[in-house]
Image 1 (cartoon, rainbow, N blue to C red):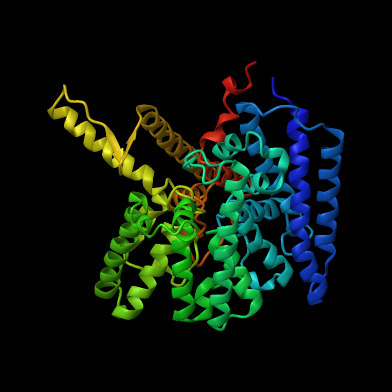
Image 2: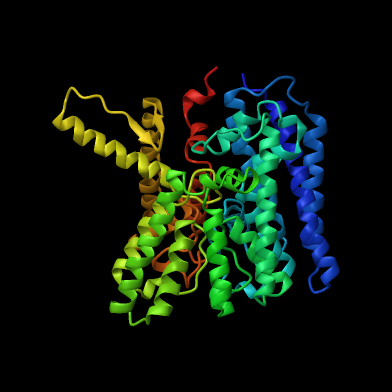
Length: 483
């Protein structure tokens, strides 16, 4: 039987942590003086009181969480954080309905970057800071942050980590999962500070440098400008953001091996990292050629635009420097394909992940070999590692779930009156946490015009994609609730 009291106690602790993070924009609103701190004051109060009540009334679990309890805790934690994280938006006059406020919060914490706002600049700076900060908090995972700072989660933390990142490598960098979580967060913070300093040196002011550092490392895409990174009109800023988007799209285990353990040989030893970088380079080359010969771009502008958008889409960040809906058909289709692929496992990027695509390619190759040599036994390898058949079956199940959720959500949006292209693009961009899509949710558009029910469907897609499908959908199975 699921111990609801223990789960509610832990959720209360998470809400207390969330209330503490809200003190950052609250302090900014008070010190800056250009924004009323009331919306954040109310939000901090409600979140802290609710968290305190849950933490005090319900007792902590006396033993390690069961598998089902871990899965339920992760799903409810993301729901609770998104709900209470939407309060600053709801108390703001710039979000007319709770649906819009909740959509913005879910998009922020899942690092999707889809917005209902027509103009971002109308928001006070404190609210903009909270939008981008939510990307940073959700980037490495809300539960992983809890494992790092809540001693209660140190026991059985690996189980929670696997529930939040069902497709990530469960490799321990340290003897205890808490130490592993802290090591990953230190790298995350260090990269964020490095990007902030680089943007400041490039001439970006402190506020916008902080916002874009949070969004970039979280691979989210919220910007302090409606025109996104294009608003800076600076090639230097674009190239800096490109470098850090690539770093955020690579596994943080790789970062630990390279930067902390100083294993230089590991730099290109990871087959997934090599495949990811090769995918970015080839896609950039193809799109550059298309823009130069069919789009009227010169070589320098075409290369910079294609490299930025390929990196942004491949890492599922969603920043924009060019309206790619005006590009030729081939680049648009290539970007749409990159939405499905995403970044590396164990990174802050979304998508199916490069490693999974590699495994699918090897699986298809094995089936071709079996067709010719029916008695042959062929193992599937990823680098030097032999992939067990159970993992292959799990991969196929995941692909089926992704396609089923994608198709079902597209049907729901179409039934609500959304056109076909917009339905497909909006669902894909939400499911794989990208943000901008095609059609009426393109890079120069927003999601505010969609029906309210469509926004709730897309919120479900964002959470399902962020939790790697299995965890989010498991609680919908009758078997999950059987005694």
